[in-house]
Each structure stands twice: as structure tokens, then as C-alpha cells.
Length: 254
Image 1 (spheres, rainbow, N blue to C red):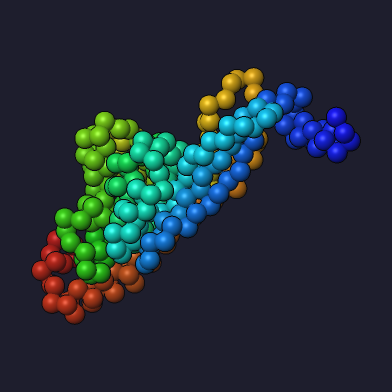
Image 2: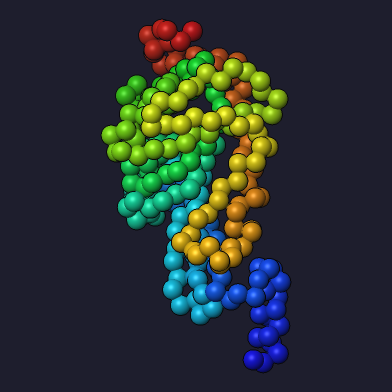
């Protein structure tokens, strides 16, 4: 072995903490899907096993938001992920149509293990429903149902598919309010505080005696709940609906 290869191998062994060369090598790819007015990003892990690294596999790791004002998010879900892909975690920044409209299609197509929402209570959910209507949405839309009854909506959808999921509600730092949402099979609900460690572990098919790079446990991601500024936003939504002559939509909300 020449000096250059010997030096590289030594550095790898020091980083991995092992002299076993049959370890995991990987790279992360971040993709911003072209969905127009909306947000749909994902990271995929490309990895190889063994010293030769001849077999290269690419798998999804996380998805951040999945929505669009058009049907672009649904279309991109079909392109980005093979059917039955396992996705360890999906993070939703906030429940607006252009950030979640493709979520139901993603859940149908893939096996999502964990879903992260910023925490919101019943009143905030109703406000989100009003916002959806004010922006031209309909009461039968997935986004509308998700905002009003997130656990039940996901339970019905996943129950039909025979899938299970853990839904994490991330609460703002210092929020000690009552946790209003409860488990509804097949949805398991958990509450975590902003800043709390909810690192997502990647589990590629490697043997127990092989090593995995610590950095691939994604310790650097922080999920910060979106502040809706409830009172201000509620007044804006009400004014918007009334300007459109949609006062009847306000019944039962305010």
C-alpha cells in the first residue's frame, strides 16, 4: 500500500474508531422540489458498504414540508420516491395549504415512520381552517380536515392503508399548556419541547459488527415551531372572509 492510501486509511480508521474496513460510507443529497408556490424539500442518503464500495444504495432520510398551491407536490412525490419507500421522518413547518397539500399523497405512497408538527390546540386549529377558507380552500380539502382534527384525519387515512405512524407535536420553549391531542390507532401521539433532542436515527441494512458514521444521526437539525401570532392573524382572516361575502363560514368559529 502506498503512503497516500495508507494515510487515508489511517484517517478513516481514526474517525470510525475501528480497523475494520467493511464499514458504511455515505453522502447526503438535499433536493428542493420544483413545486412553484409551496415548499417540498428532502434529503436522501447514498451509501455503500464494504471496502470496495461497489454496491451503492440511495434511500430517503427526511422530508421537510410537502405542499404546493397547485398539484405539483403530488406529482413530485411520485417522481421523488419509489413506492413503499421508508422515510424515517417528515417535518412540517406549519399547516398552510402550500406546505401540506401533498402530505396525504406522501403518506399513501411511502412508509413514513415519524411525523413532526408544530404544536397547536383546538382553537388554533380552527383558525388554520379559517385561513384555509380565506385563501380559497374548501371544507372537504385534506388540509382543512388536518387542521381541525389532525389525529383523526391521519388515523382514518393510515388505517385504510394498514400503516402506523408516530406524530410528534413540538411545543414552543416554555409552553406548559394542556396537551389536547390523544392517541388514536394507528397514530401514536407524543409531545416534545422545542430544543429537546428528537434526533432521527438512520437504520441502513448493516451488520452489527460494522460501524456507522456518527454524523449520519442528524444531530444538527433544529425544529422551531412557527408562531402564528393568533390574535392578529385571526382578525386578518375574519376581515378577508367578510370582504368576500363569506360571513356564513364564520359561524361556529368566532
